[in-house]
Length: 633
Image (tube, rainbow, N blue to C red; front, side, top):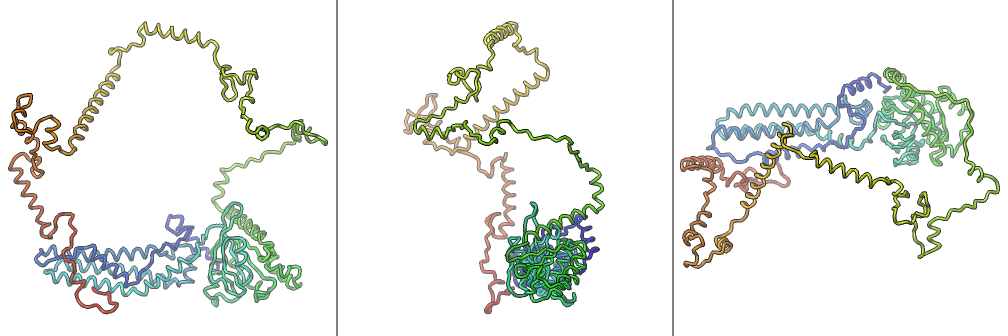
């Protein structure tokens, strides 16, 4: 578990090439639930029953019977392929995610078992596709309804048998999905503080102090059994603080799953490592054992800044340590230049100092890494940092005389400004707000004049031209002379060809608009409810009595009037509308009857009829079902 640089380099190369490497935010909580095999089979078969036709008769043409059953086989295979492809696509691939998550999944779920489960699902998908292809080929040669039906049953049965064999793989993937959803969202590339140490040394308390995380804290070992993440702010940047389970000083192969999570985080996350030590030894491990653990996993700290925090100084101060313990700390940490800071998570003494020091160390380390890269030269060559020289002349600050006078000892401010609020409190109901008293004018006595008007503290008359009347008379005389000379008269011959073209087009547009407007009025009247003969006669003032008095002014007889109304009422039917003669009407009716033959065969009332004649399909309701038996197919 020493940092595998080659593995990370390959991952970053794939990321640069644009592959989906799961990048910064890994959201495993969006993986869809993996249903059990029995539920999946019920879902697929029910959907096939609902979405495909269900009625077929033996007197149908054999091509229609074949297509009926081939459609069911293809539909079932497509649904299974869609479900299995969704499962394979949503679960992360070990090779495409960050090495930290790849090793973490290997520790928690066993990488080989995980790959084997996904591989079995993928193989099942291909087998189902082959079964559907083979049986569709056989269905093309089916010679009867019975044989086609048996081939369909065999195809669906083989598909469901293949799915039943994947029961254990689907159960395992559902357990993996539930566990992945409970993992913390750790960004491997952001600014990170990583805590490690023996159990019960105060790592979780430190995380609770500097972040909003609520990690459980108990006075016994291994309270933290997985990785916990909290977030804090420093220098207007967001930092993630990771609390790891306690690590014991023993060989790598003897460590359990809980400890290996911390080892994985130390190996793969680019973070500032904060080593927490308990100098009081209340955690149950001596200071010598804690230093040995630090030296044992020191290879994991390569290219990472390290901060050592001596916790629980509220019980025992560093100066109270024995000489041999002090010498042990100096030999272990200070010879390498490691920063050692005492703190107490109980009294929060030194906690902020540890946080600030660790954040500054990581920021400096990240800048140093970027400056040592090859890309920096191309950017630095385009930058110019100006360094202005300091002026040699000493300039004293300028302080106004009024301010200096106020600074003199014994100064009394006699000029106390009276505010409008003070005047309002003093006068009470007699107070009137006067906004004109502060106007700045050439003549202050003109502040309250009605004319000239005042606008924003300025006199409008000050900006008016005194000769404006004379200039206006001259302008009117000049305009009268221009009108007499005919300057403003526009004649047709003075227009250019382009102007004439524009005028003609404008006339055509006006004409077209008038036609559209007229057509709209006609259509509006056409859509009205037709009036009865009685209403029309009443509007036209025609009497109902059958007498000579019904003769109209133009000499029409009552029979003529009735003929007019009858001609208005008689309209051709919709089935003959738009047809010229009886021959066309006959051909149209023959085509209409021919188009109804297919719907009549199915007993449908029309194209939109979705009525199912068989209320109780035999294959769903025949036979007896035992208690709890639902496999009716």
